[in-house]
Image (cartoon, rainbow, N blue to C red; front, side, top):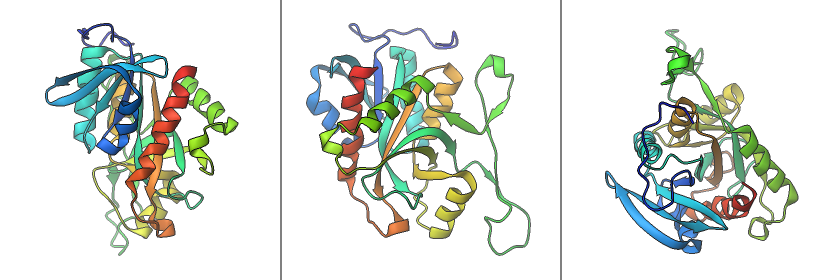
Length: 260
């Protein structure tokens, strides 16, 4: 982990534990129900649950929705716990026509799809000529360089891919799990033309409201990240929102933890 991380003062023995994030109650409730020896603490009103899950020391963090909340919760967790890695998981809206509600994405690549520069062309479609711009890294060695796309840690992603290939998680029977790109922004952009543009231009499989903020900070502080999302809805197939899809990522995380 980078020397730029703040000094940790984690309670008990939870320094360097695995941090698992979810924005909403439905994205962490199954994890909490299976945890043992749970201790709860709040940092600046963000709740963190420390305990054991599937043989591992973990901290489950409710980040609340949105990029700012996710970023704030992540910095607090890094400064307080210095986690060995971060698993950001939850639901998303679908972009990829190959995926349906309940299917999962292993986020190999993550980007902030609100970081766009629009063309000054008089074209009636504002998406024409639109390009992606980057965010400045906090790392000293990057010297102000901007990063457009972030990535899950290769070792964590490979472990998750091997698990998904075994099809041994009974709760996920019939669920498709695809490695791909996750987009994030502070909007629920319910437009097929926009979804088509993001998928064809940036190869996005799904869109949420948190992952890119977490990925930017993990990149800046050299913390391994794994991004997981389950489709709660997809306008591509006219499949409406169903929060129960959040359970899929949590089942996957529980199967993954013993392998980390």
